[in-house]
Image 1 (cartoon, rainbow, N blue to C red):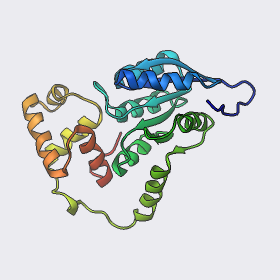
Image 2: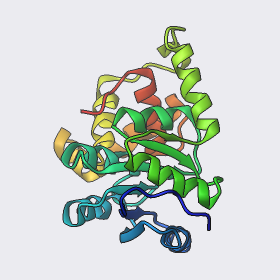
Image 3: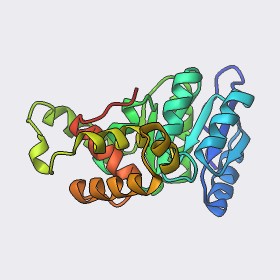
Image 4: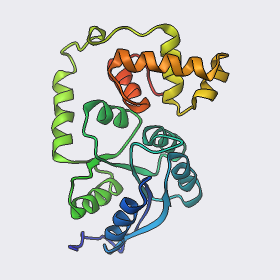
Length: 225
């Protein structure tokens, strides 16, 4: 693989967060074929990558979105809050605008699609390590579109307004809490939480917790604290 220019023998310590083992092994292989990059840890869920960030103090965390236990979005928020020196590079199949916006809102340093070539991912790792923002071309275009549309007045009329309780459930969901944890926080049953989430999905046209959270973030109904 073509090498990225190094300065003064720099060596980037990377942790991988990807729940598909074969995909994770493939990413690790091409990263470690690059001089100057060392994969120091691997995680199959968001909670584990946060623990690795605490224990290993890597330079870069390569982050998937959809993972068990804790989503990539929540893991990114926790890492940037607790370990601001760790750069987070999102590596995902999703190029939807709400995902992009949500990740940069919580402090992600780059957003690259899994359709990128191995060399492009390597270059993105080096760029975020050096303090630059790394974006796939199509993602960069959507970031520009967001800036252009910022004053265009996208409103809540695009979907039904959520109730106060649905907002409460969604806000706690954005923190990575399970249905049982949300129920304990709000003093309701986990089945009631599940019902509220079902209503939220229908109103927002979402198919998952991550989609619902990012849609609500886009509309300004919740914020990442």
